[in-house]
Length: 252
Image (cartoon, rainbow, N blue to C red; front, side):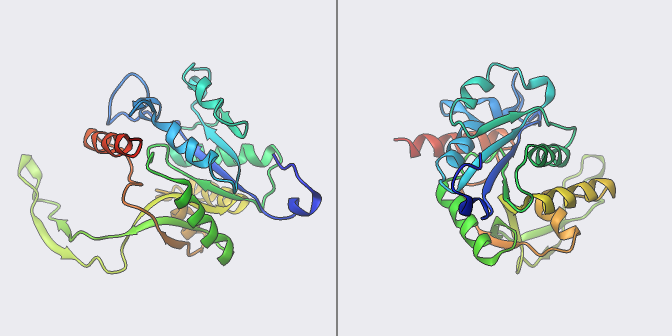
């Protein structure tokens, strides 16, 4: 995976990491949502295709639940590119899956200073252009960052006591959206730095909701690179239906 002349090997390379051990229980179905067919393909295929079509990506590492690693649905996905590796590194949480996959990469000999781009398999709207935008910004700055979107909607804080006994939620106050961003993926950081930050966050039982939060806990201030609306996360049925419409329209 690090073929090339000696001078090129001294430069950090970029690798994609996709944690796919989640069950996607909120969406339902016989398969985890990332493997369910969306607009004619398993949802994971869209992210794999985008990274495989990005010249800067040297390899793609997919963390799968150990009990799912032999599922036949993975066969066609692994054949998309020689750079794709499926690993039985899935853990009980997303953070543990990412940490285990990063540890496997280090053990396999991926250099500690290489970059990793961690991406949600449930964001099939990612594109090579967005991936390259993030890579360019991070490599120029020499520090980690993530795709994100400035919040456009007015935010309301609900009264914590208003929904008791089935009563409707009630707005307590409006929260300023100034300086607020909605995190997306990929999130791009140095391999060893990210592994150690997540490992420490897990040890401290911190509230790590994404890679950037682990890096923030370690003292970093990740770059915010504007992403795209279509790079939203598919969680509920309404998200699935909207993404299916978008993907079908883009292939016409």
